[in-house]
Amino acid sequence: MDLDYIKQLDSENVIQNYARYNVAFNQGSGSLLYDTEGREYIDFASGIGVISVGHANPHWVKAVSEQAGRLAHVSNLFYTEPYVVLADRLTDLSAMKAVFFANSGAEANEGAIKIARKYSNDKYGDDRFVIITLNQSFHGRTMATLTATGQPAHHKYFYPFVEGFRYIPPNDIKALNDALDDKVCAVMLEGIQGEGGVNPLDREYLKELVEIISERDVLLILDEVQTGIGRTGDMFCYQGLDINPDIVTLAKGLGGGLPIAAVLVNDKCRDTLSHGTHGTTYGGNLICCAAANAVLDIVSEPGFLDQVTIKGNRIIEAIKGWNNPLIVEVRGKGLMIGIQLKDIEPKKVVAELLERGLITLTAGTDVLRLLPPLTITEEEIDKGLEILRVYLKEKNSGR
Ligand SMILES: *Cc1c(COP(=O)(O)O)cnc(C)c1O
Image 1 (cartoon, rainbow, N blue to C red):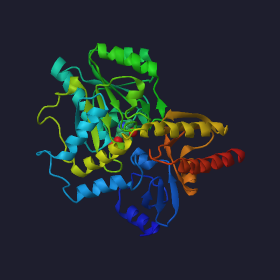
Image 2: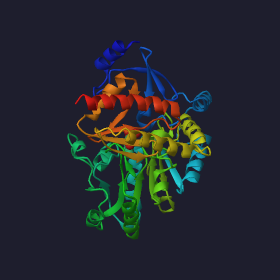
Image 3: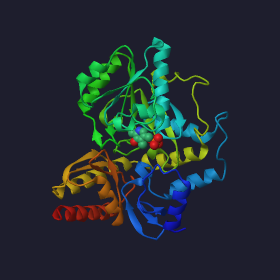
Image 4: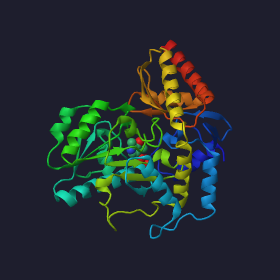
């Protein structure tokens, strides 16, 4: 099918909730994508951090196709091997003690919210259910996670929202103390806010936050849907932040392209969910777990995460070296990078870079976000950066 026909079928038959760019992709390899016209693109977005080990990664393809040819799904009424192997590996790689498998980031966060509330309900009774989240956070699109998302722009149309969420500004201990009362059961946050603008939280703030809330037995839910599985150069972002969360959620990069998510819990919450209190039909699906196991094979290879850090630093240093006045700040960690811009709309930048063969993302209102596959090569990085450098230079001199 060509682009026009695909667009026609989309507009005739698909709910128009997405504003898509004028491209249809049909093939990928490593950090390269190809559209229906055969044009090549460098992928600095990896499907919003999903394609962690590159497009059509041979190890991943082999694991997925072998599993698909053997057994795809049996339901959670039975034991199977891929999910127990994956759970064993995830608990080994983290400081966490047990796992629940879901299918999307929002769903993992729903699970985390339910676990936090039940933990509190079991121990302290009915009246301790409030979850504190941060301004500019993003936690998903289901009713509860949309409510948890600390962006007023999302709190429209879908009334009534779920009760029991409170928002505070990030990096502000006083605001945290003011928001904490006997009703609070958890704080939920991202170590680096992704959708909100690639905003890393202060290390000192996080350490102090953990001290304050753990004294009150208020749980820390760390949303690692975007930051997890090597994205920041640590297997989990919290490992680089030196804090111990009670609940961690994963999705995006975990499956390397197939929908899988996970909720990891520590000792405290290990037994909170008992038989029948939570579940999902696809959770622990054999093909998705095989995909995630293949991702972990690659990401946990010795030296792999060091390479993520090296590549990330290289990108950040290169961009800083351009000294382009349109760039206000370059921030982030590993291969999660935000370029704060001024006098130019990130949305427009993404669209125009796409025309030049580079795929990027926006974040917040004024940030261009880069989330390349963790396996991207230095050559591909340099090629992509050159497109970006020339583009921003032209835009600056054309002002
Ligand atoms: C993308 C994202 C989500 C939502 O994940 P979905 O798979 O789209 O439901 C939640 N939290 C964070 C931090 C994310 O980046």
